Image 1: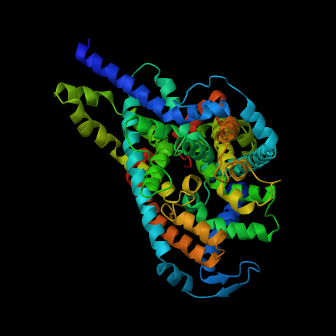
Image 2: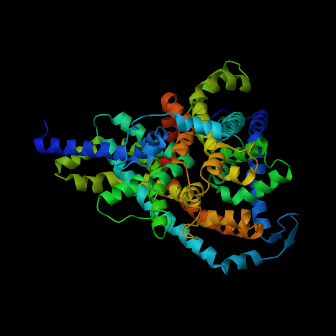
Length: 296
Length: 279
């Protein structure tokens, strides 16, 4: 680190100033406003506000829709975390072996993650089309009954979870793969000498090595998936009825379909509080796993 | 030398891996196949994988019957302007955070991380009200403001990691040789940071190109709509969806992604390595 003079401090802050101003103006201030306005009622046209105290909050806590969305949010989160982490670890282990075309396979696996979310949602909707979709064609081909993948419950939730996990599991693959490559080969050689089976090598050598990184990945993905809007909205619009409406979708509906800004903001604030718990846990786990620095 | 059963097991694992990889990329291939099919072949039983009589009709229809080119131009403008602006701001900011021993830099880093993790939905409404209040609703400038709030924390976070990876001795040597701090930054640090800047630019561009929610909320005018909301609004409304056209539009919308894969893949992988890839 270079010695720091007062002039350096001034120059440094001058370089940082645009970033700080923009972050403050475009995130800090809106965030404060979100919290403040959640105690007000806003007229949809004039935007005039009236202080209503905790009314927006008592409103949402008495609203079945809110609790349904709250529950949906956790079903969505738990389901997609389970699938993407499980699938991601398995695929990372497979891609860590030496095999023909490994480089190409590692690139191809990234596609779902980098595809525009709209494109991903539309392709799946086409494949899942009740009548002409390839999925139902294959499904019926296996002698099973035609299924409404997106317009009945619980199918819609399961489908959205599967598609959501498909979209983001490459992130898990890449992050786990990076860690797998840094495990010293000697550990496996020693385990082999001791006669450990492949299975026990995984649990006794690999798992302890990737455990820290994995906990960071789980929390990071939880933070990101908890707030997912685009994919769910584009696949189902929150339906059938409110079957796949999660908190972010409810915020959107209250604010931009029902024009209840105050109530929408109260939901957003509750959502943020839930996320703060996740973020705090994430910060703790990063501190406990300095080696995972690179995947933050 | 490995035993025969071991080698067979290895072969099976390789086959299984490739099967999985192909299954994961299948939707992409299915999109391409559908985009080049004629309407009659779309509903063929059994479905065909490769189009029998490939046609560009779907692409022509999308370009002639919808405002695809307008949406694409808007998306391109918004994504390019936002990316360039954010890159300049974040390069300066990241350099300041890494190589100046600023007082309060830990507070700044912590605040930045919080900004980075903040859900869009939490600030969506205040930002929407702010932009509408400035009279920028329905305008591309409004979207650029919103997308700056979306990409700046991410860009700063990613660039900070890249700048931290540059050995400080390089800059120190230039300073000892008599260069000013700004000269040292431009001549010595910036060239070293270039790959990181490109990576950050690629991801910012893709984030803006793909963004849906802000565009949905803020734009209510066909002249300023971007691709995601434009395609959704014109092609995926109602019950009789023309899947051939939809897949053609989706294919065209994926072009930047394919270009990135062909020419900038190295940077993408680096981006994953340096971490922070927003999902």
